Length: 468
Image (tube, rainbow, N blue to C red):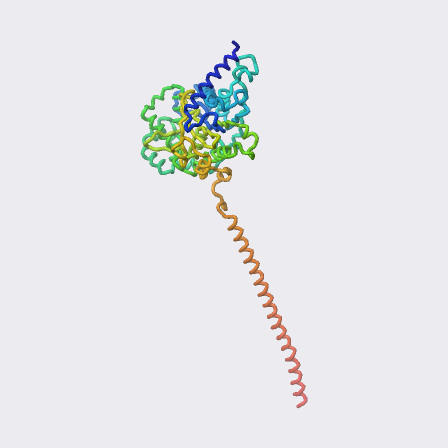
């Protein structure tokens, strides 16, 4: 049997199994056939650390793809994730022309672009009708567009670089009361990690410097742990777990957890606004043609992208008494499904070790009914309004002089000022004219008196001369 037919049969078996599992997982009578629009926001797959700390026993040599790059593990994670959603949405997406119904957007980083490509390969493989070559690659893979913008212009899937106000809030996170408390109570842990990792103590000038050093070392350790490397000799399991706890909680604080509206709005508010707008416009006559044609929007971003979106949905909270999301895992994904009756379900898949089989966990945004897994779109629009951002460039500038001035009040004030100036000018003009008249009258009197007096003197003089 030709390879392409074997591939097609395998895909068919997988998709039928996936449809059955999806329909079993759907509640409130909804099935895959009731779907109207799906939007996915995920983190890239497993990557190498961005750099290594001074005393790192492994160094850079083990990361053969380069620092910060997607690893082979990461490629497999996203291929599996794409395959998972191919099975999940079988019957919703067109079996033979899925590429025209899917829009994929990635940030402009190698690891996110490659994750998006691997995801697309799993989601939309070649089949008998789309194969483009007789070799194995042509029978199993087909090109799928991945869209992006320049990194310097990225404001949807990554915020810190172009958003100065968000960067300021991130840098001030160490001053939050909970951050100060944790820093003080775990002073010994910070000191130990700074010393053991070989950091120069003179560079640790602020609490934020120490938090960043702990986060940096923890990131390197988690990258190594994902590749089954042993912890370095200087670190025991107890300290590693404490580092994990501190890094996870601080990540929550930086990206808008527990109702921190300012950070949540800038972290994910404009992405949430786009997602909500697409759901409101889907199926409407005013919607652009591509929106009515597209059934699945996919966004390939970062841990901060996923955390920011969850925070803007008020779903990224932490507590000492419950299990927290923490830093979203590799290939974690927020799933927003809109049904034909304009109800919405939000779920979160965050299990990198069981991507092919683990089911997403349904999460309910505050303000939505808790008696159902579905939230009416009109309700979701209302409860997310305080966290959605329409003009991200304006908010990223931070407070500016005049931002809170009411235009109507300004107009009234300007009209008042103009009237005062006009009335003052008129009054001054009247006063000056009146004063000029008085002066002219006074000058005329003086001239008359000066003319009379000489003649009077002349008459007196003539009378005196006659008397003589």
